Amino acid sequence: MAAHIIDGKKISSEIKDELKEKVRILKEEKGIEVTLAVILVGEDPASQVYVRNKKRACEYIGIRSLSYELPETTTEEELLKLIDELNNRKDVDGILVQMPVPDHIDDKKVIDAISPLKDVDGFHPMSVGALCIGERGFVSCTPAGVIQLLKRSNIEISGKECVIVGRSNIVGKPMSLLMLRENATVTVTHSRTKDLQAVCKRADIVIAAIGKPKMITADYVKEGAVVIDVGINRDAETGKLCGDADYDGLIDIVSAITPVPGGVGPMTIAMLMNNCYEAALMHNDL
Ligand code: GUN
Image (cartoon, rainbow, N blue to C red; front, side, top):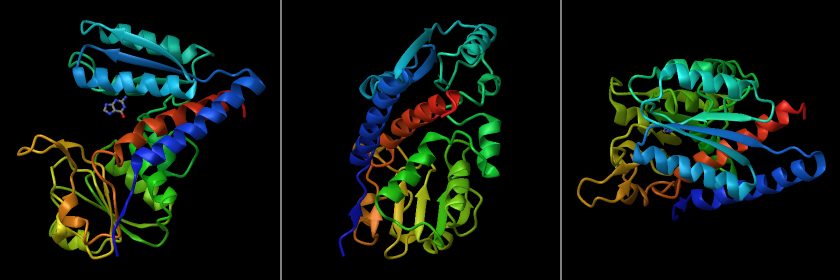
């Protein structure tokens, strides 16, 4: 049977359109304007693109965005002071500091400074801890997007063997907790895992988040498995974007797969927008 190609662009558009309607209702019926503060320090071109896309998504949905584009020379103290001000502003629901910050600023201090009540990236240790013990809190956007892709594609998670390749703080680790919350049997693998191919071959669902172009080939995947590709890499030969999974080599084996681009990528911003909406509900006791 032909593999189902999971259309992240379409699913993310659906989520954004649902949010647009919910944000409109919140404004019309309760007079609440959902607000996200976006902070960018320095002029990293990739970060500038990400920030622009986040602000565009806000505009589309009807979320107010406050933009703080600070010079590279901004001190840690100045940045922490701004975060503190935004933490205390009643009209700000979410705070996002685009990573990476310049080397002279300690990113851990920045993450810790954002109030867990406004931590729409889900990076604060309190947010991660809440996810770990199943309490309410913000979930890191990319892993939350993967769950939505699976659910909205009617792919069963409960009871399934899920192997996650990669253990980063923003994808692999929270992904494992979310899949566990959905009652999957979860294995987290990494660079020291012995016989990675055999471990991945057991999986009903493989989630690749390693950052190595096309590493997950047909040798790693059993027939009928689902492959979710979180990687965004440049193919050294063609210069085109490619994932961590070898899409062309897998398409005839898998039951479903996400393409790169157009799979997991578009979901991250959609889930960020969802976190902003949830933050506004929480701040207004709704
Ligand atoms: N840099 C790369 N990804 C992210 C993200 O999800 N959030 C923030 N704030 N910075 C990033």
